[in-house]
Length: 118
Image (tube, rainbow, N blue to C red; front, side, top):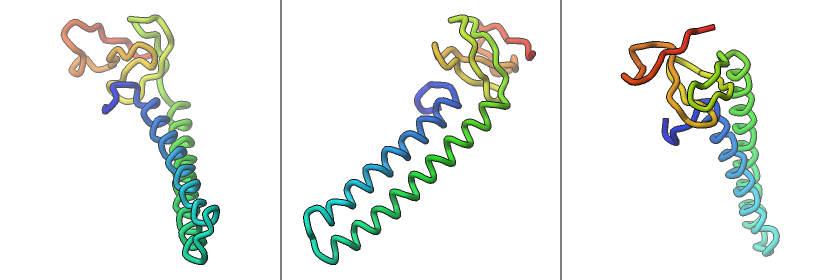
């Protein structure tokens, strides 16, 4: 995990980045029309609008996928912070305190208790 957060939160982060990137591309492409660059400005605006729209649709797909994964995960109480968090896969991190959580004792650090699957 790149950012040391829970897997579902990382999927949501990528969805947010795709949304912001798509909006930025569409705004940059609009400069071709606003600053009156003629015919080439309209072409640039059209290209950037299409790429931005594809990025926004990708963002929607990532958010949908994260939502579907979130409905089928196991929710448990974090032993560190006491809040209910969702665990995706064999190991994951708490959404709130980023403590490593696992159901498999092979992946658990030596000082960590293994949660029982409910």
